[in-house]
Length: 337
Image 1 (cartoon, rainbow, N blue to C red):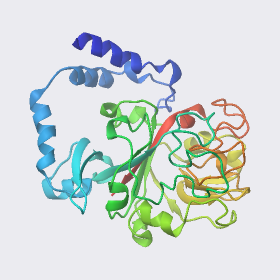
Image 2 (image 1 turned 60 degrees about the vertical axis):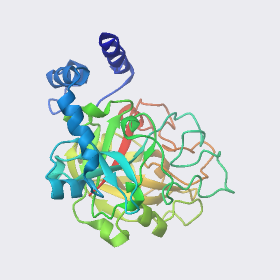
Image 3 (image 1 turned 90 degrees about the horizontal axis):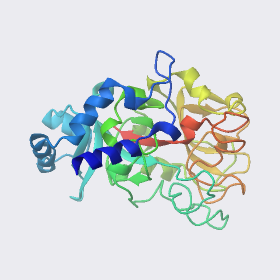
Image 4 (image 1 turned 45 degrees about the horizontal axis):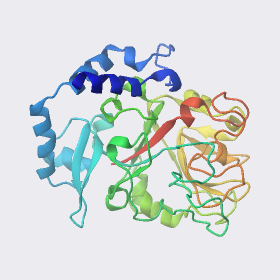
């Protein structure tokens, strides 16, 4: 039985259709061929009751964020933990306890289930109700208390937990992790397409979380013009750099933004709003649908979805306006601290 599970697990991780970012040697490395992967896989398929008991006992600790777990209980291990909201709701999420001092709480992931769908089922961060100007907010999940998904499937589907609106934070961290990549391997450096964090405590100016920030900067069709974007915050790279960030987007897009930032509530030439421009700040042109994610309920007919128009020319071939295959086929994980 265990052997069959192992074979199924390896099959699901087949890299035939998944691309990974370059490692420092500039040579593309298949994660399944690394020694670290083999060791982790061996540990994952072996039942370790001591470890299971340790993980299960985390539920008795009372903390509102991963930072609380680090500070109150000296937790230093990456993985799944239990948190409690201000109303006493218990939920599970992933804690990054190592990056830049640790204490980062995963609160959401944005996953594009099909770039060929246009605001269809699964586009929770834009609209599942079709491309409709009469529903300018779409599903409205950037500024409501809906929750969905599970932490273990955060790279295979959209995810949003109560921490998104419950935690009062100062900074953010963002990971771009290939679709369907298992939680146990997220923190392998070679697995990330892009990873970065902020360190200027910007969230204190906007209510302490994205729920409050997007109340101030609604992600809504026709809310303003392309000059009415929200804040653009400098980032510190944990994996990647400004040049590699540029290359993750299409050659036409590279003329419109400055890398080294995370930008909130960008508005394009057609007055459609997008929630986050990951790794970049729009400067000229404002065709942000090709390099920003999430959105309201209406776009140009060919642009609606969680990754609105990342496939505009030809998916994954880095031609014209299309984003790279690495970027298009990766989930965007959002953390607070």
